[in-house]
Length: 159
Image (cartoon, rainbow, N blue to C red; front, top):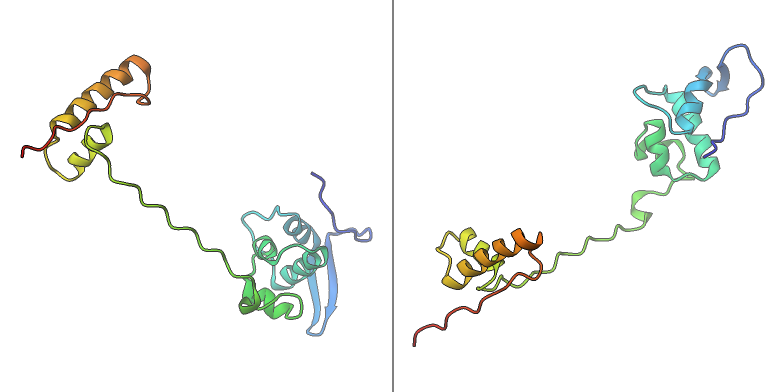
């Protein structure tokens, strides 16, 4: 993967003085370059360096959520710096909701899952579930899987 590096004229030091409305600001171009390329680890940029790096990334078309992580500034700060380029949260696309998990049918008696259901409910397992668990354990020892283990029909309730 190739990285885009900041093209600056040859200087003897990796710092540049930039004139702003507030006066002169010193920028560490190595720090800015590392942040722009996603290699900022364990240190922070100054406010001016973060703003300069964010401007470079916005000009490249990088998503502002990625910019926020790379320069260490919140989305609100980026909106304050660039109100015309970053949309407010109300205009942002809505997040999709995670679908609710489907309810499974309760475990049937006469299966290993039925035996587990009895134990979860703190009730004694019925004869069919006890037989299914034992048969399933034997099946697992022989085949290495519970898939295909026999099941048993529960005894009919006395009338």
